[in-house]
Amino acid sequence: MKSNFTENYHTRLEEDVAKLLIEKINYNFNAKYNYKNGKNYPYQIILQDNLQQLSNFIVDKKKEFNFIIPKMKLNRNDDLELREKILNMTPNQRKELGINKSALWYIKKNLSEGKIPKIYEKILLKIK
Image (cartoon, rainbow, N blue to C red; front, side, top):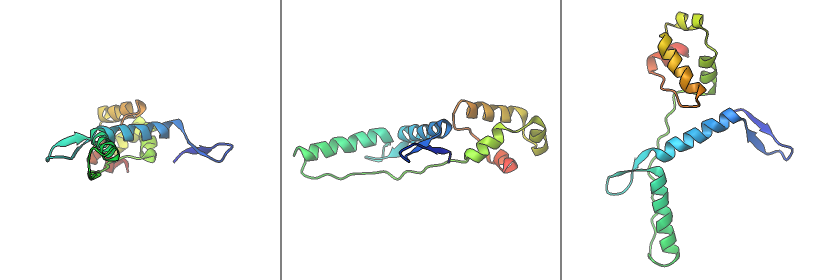
């Protein structure tokens, strides 16, 4: 992980790492999880509901409180090293690996825009 230390020895993430972290948090807060009555809700709504229930418990509107955290699964098939490798890939390297020109272009475009790229297993195996 790329980071710098401040004069107080606090860690400061570099801009690209901070963007990735924020992107991942946003993705997971908008992802839907099974919560109540077998229905799927975005995680941010689940968190708000739990906080509302907690506040009702604190002000004695409810006599019990059950904090429910749905099981989360974080998926990622890329990392910073892979991102750098893709962004620095030359046309000759792409040809040698047998990767389609347009596929690599879209992956690079998403990476440069700070998005999580969709890298199919077939391409991933060629790059790694």
